[in-house]
Amino acid sequence: MRRFLPLLVVLAVLAGCTSGGAEPQVVPSTTSTTSLTAGLPASLVAFLDGVAEPGTVAFRATYHVLQKLGGAQTDIEVLSDPPSWQLRVGDLVFVDGPKPATCRVSAQQCVGQVREQLLAPTGVFSRFFSSGSAQALATDARRTQAGDPVFSERTVAGVRLRCASVPVGGVTVSTYCLTPEGVFGWVDTPAAHVELTAYRPGPPGEPTGVPYRITSDGSFLTTP
Image (cartoon, rainbow, N blue to C red; front, side):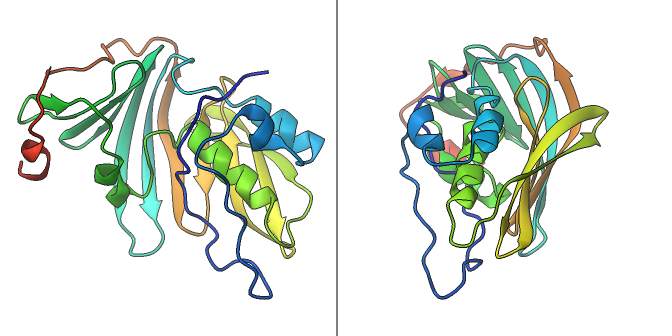
């Protein structure tokens, strides 16, 4: 069984999809594998057990993210070479793992933390390809009128993915799909659609650590 490190709740999905005015259950922002899957159907627990913890699987991937409200689209490149990984979004580089950082390529400077708020405009956060989507799927399964999970397969970017969906009120509104290595390659929710456009398992071929010097003045991040 693969174990999850403490993680952020990252995809706020299915807002307003519960019935009868009931509020969706809030999953704590930090959790273990046990609390993540407690009370879920055994088949869904098995699916979530297949999710690779961030920073444990080597791969290189490019994702296309569509925000369904407003139509904003973003391409995000993820390079993972355990124990660290990078997200590259335009001029920004987000580094997570033992030495987290947020960097601007044009400034060639970094601050020593992941600035999640700078990722917010993309519709995803730094662990969307791993524990973030696992958390969202588990949250869906605990919602009012959530039905039994439905499993399927699909091919995306030439990769065969295993998928899980949880109907809510008899309607399938979200689908989460994993690569054979346990990386999310397709996530479709009412808020966003995240899809692989390129994927290669194994070492990414480039360093994934902090690329530039770290400074305490992060003004360069908001003023390119």
